[in-house]
Length: 495
Ligand code: CS2
Image (cartoon, rainbow, N blue to C red):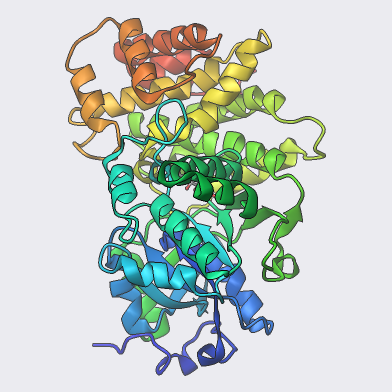
């Protein structure tokens, strides 16, 4: 049995290791949602800042639900291996920026204590789309049991909203300046969205707190990007062999990384720009480009890949029909992007194509397929509606929505039961059991998910989706592609 990775054992591992005194680091950031994405992205940038002498930005990692990350990393003093993989091989780096780990359900008081520590000046979040608890119309789902709980029990919250509001209330009473809240989830205008939701939540507690959150707390938006497939047992075994030490939870990722952040940090921030982070006034153009081109294509590849029998993104993307579809999806989405921001989507999509082709990542289509009801609005529905408004067809964008519905319905049939999950699973299951005519079913799914609510082009979009659904039903992805003139020929071949 190998020894465990830790402060004591790290010195001679064959990997890049933190070259700073970890014991001298002070906490400056609380991060909510300390999953693999955070550990491959933000924690690596902060690690570089700490190594550069900015010792007061250590991270307190908080899990809002499961103890798994804490259980894996605590015996390792918060250390873990980041494995950066592509066809050239694997580069290992041990990250040291996570100083301590808390599990909210076990001890909400400890999380509030961390959040009210005056040394904490930034709170960052990667809690996934569904944890923002938005109702179908985008406002706070104030009837959600966890929101109801947090309003009744402000001292022992369950949600990010409950923790942030209570910590800000306590800081305000204590005369401690507020922290800056930096949302790092794949939501449009993520900072502004969280700000709006938190104001709603705080107002339900009391009007003064609502005003305080509205006027005194900064919520810069940010665009985050790095592909992070879930770690497998084979990864664990390989990393242990390479390190000569056990690491209970190494994180796999690609060489590419990007972080664009609005520069509004009244309480200070690390000098992230020294390590490749782009600090901007307005993140929106970057965010739209990433959500609509990367994430939109990802969701398309995931559902079409699953329906075509491909378990990983690289394999799905190597399927000539899917590849051709993605090129056309990009061509459809690009005109919906902000035109005056100086961004160039053509080299961007070329780089995405290379990233999606990374065979060393084995990024599972089922992983991306999770939570489609939360993801599709910003990834494909917004651009589909923009096209319809401009009198243009969204036939490829709408196919992604149809593929999501078809893949959801295929679970328990051609796809394994529970192969991926969605917060709407129970309601979707009921709906699929009712054998409704296709358009009625598509309408009911749109109602349930709150897609395009109140939008003038909603019905047209539903009709596109329903047409694709008929094709999926009659002949699977082959027929759906054929209806778009996509065959099995590689793009550009055969005239
Ligand atoms: C993916 C993203 O799982 C998903 O939905 O589309 O996690 C994607 O890998 C990241 O946003 C890349 O930055």
